[in-house]
Length: 65
Image 1 (cartoon, one colour):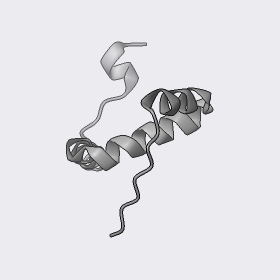
Image 2 (cartoon, helix red, strand yellow):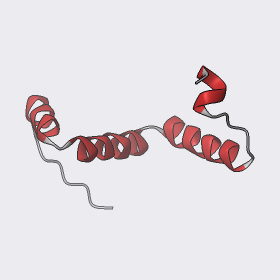
Image 3 (cartoon, helix red, strand yellow):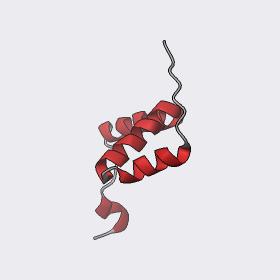
Image 4 (cartoon, one colour):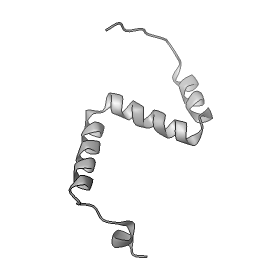
């Protein structure tokens, strides 16, 4: 795999992320976490398995009305 390094100061990345629409920002952050964190991906797999197995509770069950 070819790696291309592009030197971008962190403050420029932060400003670009701040300018994103909320949904775009959320998607970007989720994608970033998925790329750098195997634990994050594993937690998603576990949550999906629990949901599929019916091991979830509704908001009402957890917090009442």
